[in-house]
Amino acid sequence: MDGTTYHIGEVATRAGLSLRTVRYYEDVGLVAPSGRTEGGFRLYRETDVKRLLLVRALKPTGLSVEELAQLLALHDRATSEELSAVDQDRLAGLLAQARQRLRIERERLIAAELAVEVLAAPAGQLPEAAVREPA
Amino acid sequence: MDGTTYHIGEVATRAGLSLRTVRYYEDVGLVAPSGRTEGGFRLYRETDVKRLLLVRALKPTGLSVEELAQLLALHDRATSEELSAVDQDRLAGLLAQARQRLRIERERLIAAELAVEVLAAPAGQLPEAAVREPA
DNA sequence: GGTACGATCACGGAGCGTTATCGTTT
DNA sequence: AAAACGATAACGCTCCGTGATCGTAC
Image (cartoon, rainbow over all chains, first blue to last red; front, side):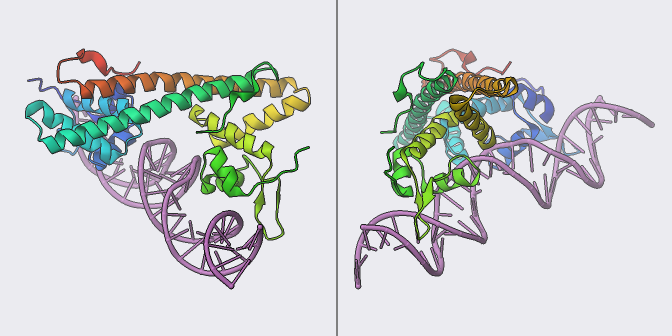
């Protein structure tokens, strides 16, 4: 195993998060450090960094921290043991939810890009119906 | 002119926003109703609805409400008068900022989609480097 | 032994959701 | 006159940012 440990600063930098955010994710049960120094410094391992990167990557899914925690916990267990049918369903459900949110985000993103170009156009350069009412 | 007016409920529904959000946007100076009834009900016109739709469309830019207000104000003035060089710069700056944010969002969205598929894969089905450290 | 770096409160703020209470519209 | 709709506080919540004050690492 790789026993190398890191302090919160390096971990946060590598994960692209602030110290505050890393600590917050610990508070809400998303990612806990693998240990502490004598003096109380948080100690992280590579797996913790990967976890933080995963959490950060999943943020655009819009899942709540509780849902994210469940999702990660289920996925973790799925790698070591066989999930019960119930848990498999819950995992699939969360993944479906995440995908759905991402689809919506993608649409909103495209709409936003269009809206920005409308604002940037010299008046009447682009079609009027660029900003539509939602379905 | 089109003198038709609407109450907040219909406007909110058409714009895909909650009543709370529409009122909030008024509080922060984004979109104000064109008038009020005797009893105090907010009255909106078509232009107000369009404004709300635009605000909603621009939300994924991540611009703050103040920035959005500035952007819309500048754009409004640009349609009726010639902007000063300073204002033209500020407008261009805000648009550039919006586009930059959208680019970042697009990347994060793609990364999130990849991360979800990683979680969905039956372990070792997808490349390991799916979740990368940020630049 | 100094200078980075980290820990723990604690307050703040954006962007709304959510009652609760009361008035308006039609 | 009742059913639907709206107004105004005011508190709550999430996801952190921002000090302040103090201890730790090396």
